[in-house]
Length: 89
Length: 202
Image (tube, rainbow over all chains, first blue to last red; front, side):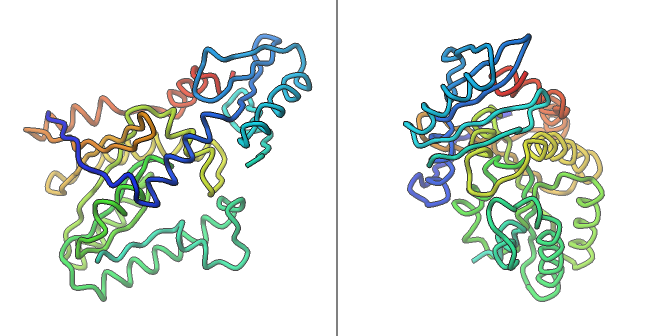
């Protein structure tokens, strides 16, 4: 098996749009519930997690951050579905 | 120039479409894409017909627009996520006396792909991401097992430091290809668990 990197035009609009979507994701707020605690994760950084006792408190924190970053806030269900979404971009 | 047939592009021709309603009009746009594809098979003189393969937001459209667009061919921009659908499409291509060629785009890490999926213009439920990433790999293995003569072009996509990269993966033997395809199989539960482990759900 051999892997070969192929040149890709990073300025192509489709590539730029894809990269921009990931960049936006790195600023968004992701809320989930586990063992009686609400967790808020910022972007791709798992170490950035904050915990809250209530969903309202988690959402209040996440919305402020999402608004500031012009990103989005998601609340996830246990099976990974999106229960709520707010876009601020 | 390639003739590109994409259900996502055809959605824009449906009057009630908006990016937030992508899932609602998906069945209708898929039907339109099939009709357009079968018509192109009859009318186009090209020999090769490219079928894209890969889950939602794997980078298929980005790959084909940057690497396949100049080929004189028909390209069906699809996830190829059902075996039944793949079987019908391959039979139609062969019946048209053309040669099916598969281009599969496999994200090395599903988390950036999931992020792109969540934040791109077209909105789908997360189950669409989990299902298509599992099922498209399953279909790819099925094709490799059942159509040894069909060319499978495998590309792994990565997103590091704001760059989207594609690596072509070549195999010395068909067995080596099969082993690779077996190694990348993921159930929907596997994918849900992986995404959850990254902090997106319980």
